Amino acid sequence: MQPLKIWEEKIKKKRYQSSFRDFLQDIASNIPFVLYKMPFWISRFPPTERIKIFNNLEYEKDRDTLIKRGNDYDFEINFFQNYKNLIDKIWVAATMQDPKGENITYGEAVRFSKNVYLSFIVIKSCENIFYTFYSQEECKNVFNSVMVWDHSEIIYFSTAILKSYKIFYSRYIVNSNNIWFSSNLIGCSECIFCDNLHNQKYCIKNKEYKKEEYFLKKEEILKEKHNFQDYYNRVNKKAENISSENVSGNFCVYSENVENWYFCYRLQNARNAFFVGHSNGRKNVLDTICSDDPWFWDLYGCSNMGSAENCYLSNCFIGSNLFYCYDLLDCHHCIGCISLRNKSFCILNKEYSKEEWYDLAHKIFASMEKDKILWEVFPASMNPLYFNDTLAHLFWDFKKDEIVEKGFMWRDEKIKVDIPEDAEVVYVKKTPVLSDILENTPPARSSLPPQLRGTQGGVLLEYQGFDENWVWQINPEILKKVIIDKNGDYYKIISQEYDFLMKYGLPLPEIHWLERIRLWLKNNL
Image (cartoon, rainbow, N blue to C red):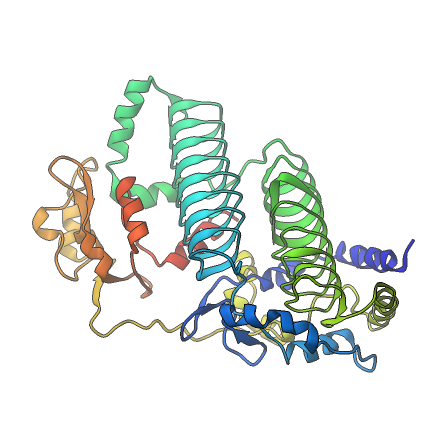
């Protein structure tokens, strides 16, 4: 056995002892769930002293010079101190983005996709993705959703959708189409208010109807726009495991031998895994979150991994045989490296011959074992994200005092939103008059009187309703307004969103775009 394999096995053995809670704390805290506004761009990192941030354009210009800024390894200090010395002198990209991406400026962790807006982790030929967390493998036209994978299209307010088309306000849908307010469907078509069905069509509340009768009932149900959010809240939150063996968790599809996981697809031999999978299959995954793309296997303590194999305690995209690395692209055999591209046999961003690299790697891992940190993640004091702005905080009720004591940062101040002084504001909250109108209107006629629609400012209900021909309308004036939700958060309706809502007869969203994603995640765990 080669010396490197010895150290790899020691890391694996130790990581197998990590608890699910520690996995979330250590690994999920590397996945941001907030985007911070900079002067002319957005950032996955808040502005703190823990990391230096470049806008992506300047970063890509500077990236090939990083190999010249490497450090010699200093055995007088431990590995993490060596790494900190390196990161203190290197700027990192504000967001993880494909430099050749089209219209992805306002997306985080976007690769080989286009037209992405305020969304996180969009991978491999996806298009028109808005306010969504994790879309991969040729998905198109997705709004306000979580985990939409494998050639899914036209998805709205939904979670865990695979190989499906026209899915609205639903959860855990596989290979289905034209689904509303439903869950745990496989191979179904035209279903509303259904749960746990296989290969069925024209069903409402799991009862099958004749085609003509079904569409008449569907038409009436879809007129009840003011009930859509309530209908979604009633959708079953517990996922079925589909065609899987020896698994324990939530929504594991075509998988086997998986322990402690959520939302996994075609995965084998895994423990502590969140959002991991691909249509081609994955195997040997431990303590890993948000990893996908054309191929990978053997990931241990990783996040944001794409086309990768045999990687340890890294947060990268494409590469192999990586240890404690960040944002590497097409690299292999690297230890403690940051932001390199097309490099190999590097340590602390310094390049070596193959023989030199193996000799030095053996010495470094031996010293790390002596310091009892070989299998550990980076210290919390080096994490550049606010803990309560990461996925870890969404998945577990970590307490501030405990987290801060360990060295993580915690954000107490509300993120400031710059609203133009002359902006016209629309409130989600209903006035007593409008509430009375809505409550006394039959469910099948949720329209508002024309004189109350299209006014300046006012409340959200004034901008939508049925016309005299029962055609759902949203006043385009809403595009000029700033909306304030019940929590006091500001958001706008963009033109692509408006067109989508109009095309599919959907009501205006009533909560901030980020809270929509948070809601879908929390409601499905």
